[in-house]
Each structure stands twice: as C-alpha cells, then as structure tokens.
Length: 313
Image (cartoon, rainbow, N blue to C red; front, side, top):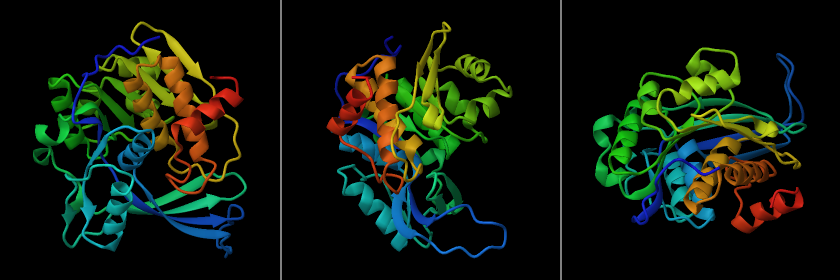
C-alpha cells in the first residue's frame, strides 16, 4: 500500500524537524527499587535526546539532508545538546540559545533486567518556541516536515506552513494539550505512542481511536506498541500491522524517536506503508540494544541486515 501524499521532488533539505531536544542523565539500576530503598547504580551516562532532535539524527545517519528547528538553553547543557545534533551533520542554523535558561533535561532510571525506563524531566518555559517565531523561511525548505507536538501552537503553525507549500507533515504524537487538535488537523501522517490515540479520541478501543483521528485530517494513523511493533489504519479502513523485532534490550529510551526518523526515511524513499513500518520497527529495535536515546541509532545497512535475518527483507 502506497502513502497517500505527494512529496516535492527537490528542496534544500530532505526533512525539517521541529520540536524538542534534551539531555538525558541515565541511571542504570539492577532492578526496580522498593520504596525508601537505597540501590547502587550499575552505570551512569549522559546522553543527548529529545524527540524531534533524535529523529533528525536518525535521518542524518540514513543519509538524508536534515534540518532541526527549536531552542536550546544558554548553559553548558544546551551547548552539549546543540553540539551533539550539529556533529551528526544536522543543520542547526535556526536553533537559538536562550540566555539565562537551562536546557531541557531528564533523569532516566533504566531497569537493567528489562531495559524499561522511568523518566523525570524538566523544561523551562523560556525555551518553548512561540508561534510568531515560526516562519516559512525556517519550515518550507524540506521535502517533509516532522513535528513532535510539544510546543503545540507553534507545531500547528509549522504544519500549516508546510501544507500550504505542498510539503507532507508527519506528527510524532505523544501528549494531548492546548493546540494538539489544531496540529492533528494539519497533519498528513500521524505516528502516535500507544497511549495517545485513546487519550485524544476519548475511547478505549485502539482501532476506533485511530479511526476518529483519521476523521480530523490525517490520511494515515499509526500506533507504535513497543516490542509488539506497530499498527496503521487508513481512511478507507485498511489495516496494516508490523510485528516487532527480537533483540537483546539494553534500554528502551528513544525507541519511538528513532521509529519516527526511520518512518520519514521510508516515506521519502517511496516505499510502501508495509515496508516502512517494518523498517521503522527494525530501527527502533536496534536502538534498544544500546543505552541512550540515540545509543543504537543505526545505519541503513545494519537495519536492513536485521530485517533480512528475521525474514522481512
């Protein structure tokens, strides 16, 4: 099944990503702690993250010309976040540092036995992007736009600009907040976390929730389901399911972000929805084999090798 979107043939960038960047501080523990218990760390690591930023890094590792739009704090954490994006070859010319502001950061507790994580985060209001800061010069320079929907009013404006210029919009949908409905309405391909569809649509049934989302504007709605893979639904009721890949899991942090980056690659490559979902699941699985939001962000040949090994070439 083909994607129901038209992609511009040429642009300065293949993809523009607007949204979050962050710096994660990963605390790896041997097991889940009991209340009030002191537990010695197995390991500690500082690692770059953030949904849109990590997706753009994955796109860059796959060979796409990428641009990230957002803000960083004017501190050492912000400097580190920006440099880790720039060093991957992602254009950051429209990423200002906010004087006196701390960059978004997270403390992530990773259970060594399962790779599952608990996240504690903070993001100062001063590094949120406002709608009036979003302009066509920043957004309408790619063949696709990815938004993560956290600065929802600004993300909605970016999505409107992209659609006005004939650029397909992919939304990384995770939370529901003021402005989310406007963003969904201007999205072509929505790729959501397992919790988003039910929260957004207000119903318990997954496919009914996806159907209601499709009524709002997107031509395709995808729900990622962790180790169970992903399922997609189209406006005409066509359902596509892609099982997860079996890997040795070290850390699930960032798996969704990497899925989104790989999804954009498949879209721009002209692949079918089926192959794109398989490819995205394989990329997300490989990321889980290393610690950090981008720890296992893989190259094309490694992702395709995993697909062949598990019978999905």
